[in-house]
Image (tube, rainbow, N blue to C red; front, side, top):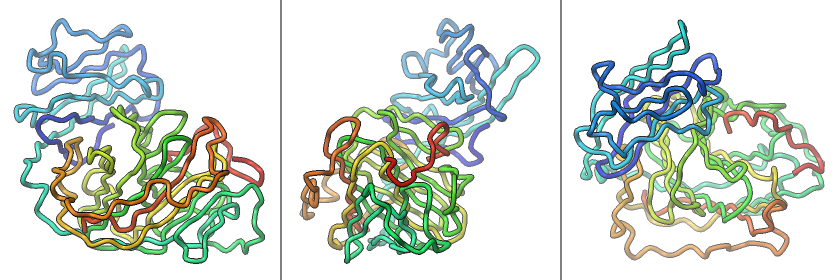
Length: 371
């Protein structure tokens, strides 16, 4: 029901404690109780289809929200705002419906500000692997840009190639160390960015989830989600246009950051990513027309810590003083527009940055002429 590793946060920011029913079922009419050491030490109570605040612990007053976007799918994750040092410790997620009940124990660990500046991750030069690209994805000669076309190319159906989803992997694979790169996603359309294990499925319908070998975040239907199982809604305060992906192979962790304001978006905690070769993973094309992915030139790495970025605490701006700005929208063709919102949509990999989809239920795989 919950993660097997501690959830980490930074004082002053928000954190989501993930929890879901297994097997999946609607919790809309169940009792959902988050509490500390005692059953009556209520952090948040949802009962009779409503939030109940009468017996909530005073320390959590006005700071909790049960994320109900996925409650009909069994997602009972809790968001806590304005994290305090006193919030550190164990939390119980208890769900009951008559004689049926489930309970999960989670640990919240507070990360100190100074812990973020401990390491020097490697700058990662990311290029796109043409042998993995879906036949409707056209790569440039330098493998630094790719665009979806309606016409399927006559390419060999090699084992490495995705054949049902508009996916492509990075050429580079990582087995150790820490690595960062960026993806410019623009302002509209659907997209997903993250990492995948080398052995991720390439043929037919695949699960965009950790169980399927993919750790990613996505924008889908105007909502932001982490591709957990089931998906975790992400209540972002702004629409990110550039996503930084931070992979820590040694910890088995991947963090996603809004590179526009340095606010962390989501972290798959330590131990989530297995100890095999991991590659950058990108999805584009469904619900959009001709989304483009472009890669920028290599930049120098600088201090950046991945272990202290699982919450939503922005990094200090001075860490990036003197960096070259990336031209927003570089390489955008006049026809690169989202078919749904009629806005430019561009995916740009900034590789490396100077700091060193759960399965789509109800969506049919992409075929020739679909997008």
